[in-house]
Image 1 (cartoon, rainbow, N blue to C red):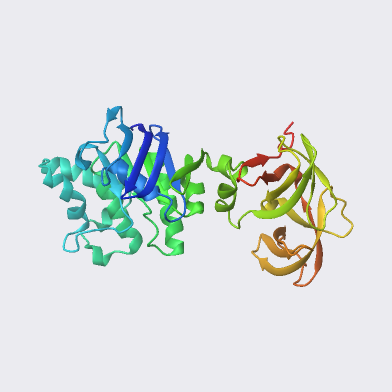
Image 2: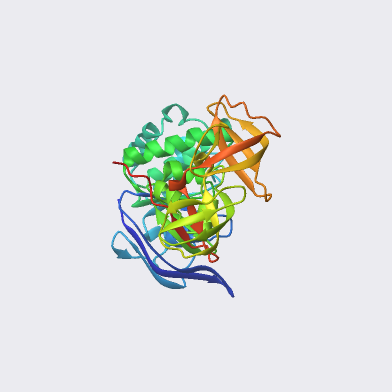
Length: 365
């Protein structure tokens, strides 16, 4: 297990700045996920750690050793790519052993490492097969096994599941989580898929426009997003955003289209116009006689029945769109006028710069 530290790291391609003064530390044994949209700089940052891209400014430390000027082979990290890059004429055993043979390791030690990696990945029965005889998930496990046998200080994963179909991606994601629990190795994982990030990460680094928007545990990022971008990027379905007029400070009075003013306990944003953010699970369809503190009238559009819950895509009186949640046996139909209630402890306000203000959570006592 190794700690990986980046201090004020920058990278440019010509006049284009792709990594802008980033600092972060990956703890020993941690699985950290770099999450962001295409072009956010996450893969470039990973390749800089691996030594596949140069670092223009700042420092990189791996296991206490300055590493920004070391060749990739001297950094003792192993990278697993989106494309498996297996040798088609070699068996699984030969693919996994190839790198160790190149550095002159004894055959007895190679066999020991390959067999242990195969056991760990439940691939003992596949060692004599060639890549063409394997499924996509099995090929990706071979690529991971090839990294494991190197016994690196850290594993770097660059969107390793993106070539798999949806069901296989879910299974392989669980296998990766189990692998991390068994190995307790330092891992950095790059993805644009927020579900992968939420389910795999000890901590998530949310990247946007080549800078860090937020670093936190999955639930910190989900429940208390640092910015409008993080709030909109993390979560499926996405957070609702509504125009809101705010008056007062401390316990602010909020009004959105179709609602009476309601109060929220929130850090002092000051009066003005904000975007109110609230996740669909915190907006509930309520019966006509319900008397919730914060409610609004809306017209139901698409009704998405998911079994255990129903998502109702609504339109408020000013044309704003809103996703609300109802139970699995919801009777709501397209075209119905419904009343939706807001959990005021789950409200966020975003100012014109995208800065977030969070409602105080409900008293857990």
